[in-house]
Image 1 (cartoon, rainbow, N blue to C red):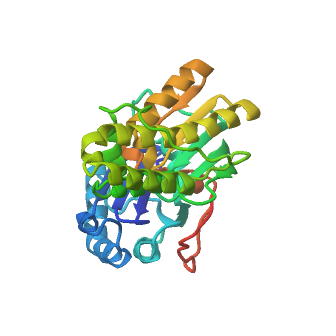
Image 2: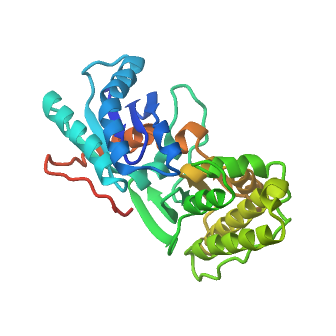
Image 3: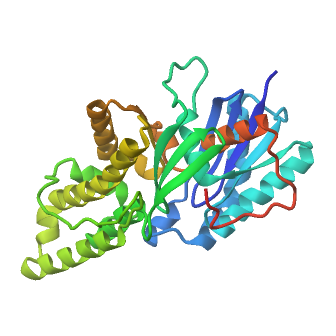
Length: 338
């Protein structure tokens, strides 16, 4: 029996659609929105308008590439968390398509989908998939969480950021030194030629498995302010070292908690997910720690690290198998929790 799921993602500034068949990805299409770079961050109203323009072409492209027309079994969509206006576009489209084709409607938690991005696989691909239970470090622009995953649809949140997310810390620190939005990838790039030990920043002393990045972000701001008073060219003369140092501090905070949770919970199946999982240094260091600590490490491919519809479709596939459907009265939630 063939089970085909259409996934739709509109939580922020990427309009995406994907097709999954029997758990395998057939297509994954994304339309970005360049306009936000001019404002140094995502403008919600502009994002929702762009989603309205992009959603039909993107869905058509995903269907065409997968060789599908109307022969899909269900439509899965991002219910939240995210920008309300953006979520409304995807939710409304999914509802309409569900009614028109008389197929099930499946709501998906965006954070849950990021975790299951580790299960995105192509046909005939030999990929090492996570075994249950596994520990997932979910790091993105809006969330930083530690989650124990017992099954495709069973998760336990054991730690989260008490203030800013790791991705937000990257972007805000990048803005302080004049880098474009989104700043995380720029910091990653400049850091490759810098010394991660050039400058030290105080790390938060948060208990248990929770995170905090607001203090680190503020310490970085004051550090740059004070150095510029001494040398007006400090940033331009030391940009590589600055980026390498702040990146090292953020990643160290993340890995310290991950190591602690792994040791105390006795879990060696380790995964990362979310936009920040695309950071090359985070990937390198988690692989290094994995070798040292005998972890079985799982890292999504780059195209599945940032927001995408493949992860929505995969999550929708497993919910479809469990007959977990949504009603037409479902509404998006900007602050949906995992």
